[in-house]
Length: 397
Image (cartoon, rainbow, N blue to C red):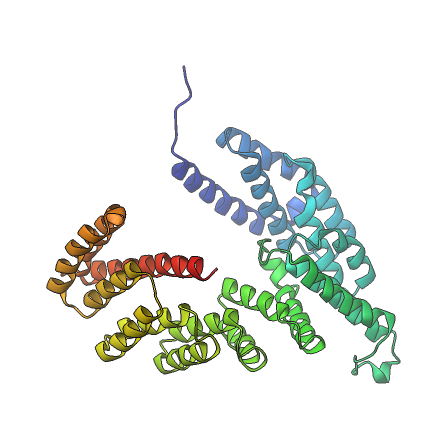
């Protein structure tokens, strides 16, 4: 008899429930687990094998990772390095791939930082510099703290030293810029957040921005993390620095524009568009953002002005037609939008399938169901935005 097929979604739901139950068990039985770690992991593996026989090695190992770090989080021995190493050793043995020890070593390295064993932390973390940007900043922080320890106690508040350790801290941040490891590749659990891992990252990024004022890469790395973390305060701080140092850099201007847009700061977004146009008068992207703002505010005069300029600068005609359609929709001019959509289908047969999808969205946009209408409007605008920007950047490349 063939095995019963179970949809992936149901397996994931069951896996999530099993993980929640396991976390609750760990919270209530921490001391019992600490007293016999091998038996605990045998229990975990048995649960996985009996309930999820067909899961991938990656899913299996992720479960082991999460459970292991939860045990560490709940344990009263979480600062005992021998205990941590023993816990991680047993966890590694039950994983499908032995190479999956990285997260354990990184957590151990961060624990060592917490208790001031900086040199040991450097030894453990160095081989993982390409795994996540957070690792490079953690190593740099270790050197920075070691540099302070080289000074007499009354001078430690002043860490502007050029000792070998201080130079090593700078070298690690240079390595971060050279290696450009992924940002937020590692999913740290709460116990790691308590190790001040994010505070260390931002502390070192701020120092690097001061150390290397002509190097924009640290602002870029910081902005990527701020966006992924949803940290608007830090994102705003970095964009303020970028707008002063790199006022003509389209990367930062683009991000500043979207930052203002997300905050519903129309005046601020408009000012950024003007700056883009001043610094990049021949490019189409600033004009596109001007058109986008005019559509969102339903300002026909401003839209027509930007449209005339875009036409003169040879913005692709089908982009302008799509934006015209968006303007009619956002302005609530349903009849005009429907007539225009049919005309576009005749003029742009290659876009027939895409225009059909937009037609379905238009029906929902003018629905009496407010929630449905709002969702369809966002999907419509996002879709056109991605499509048009991709074409504009291809044309400018």
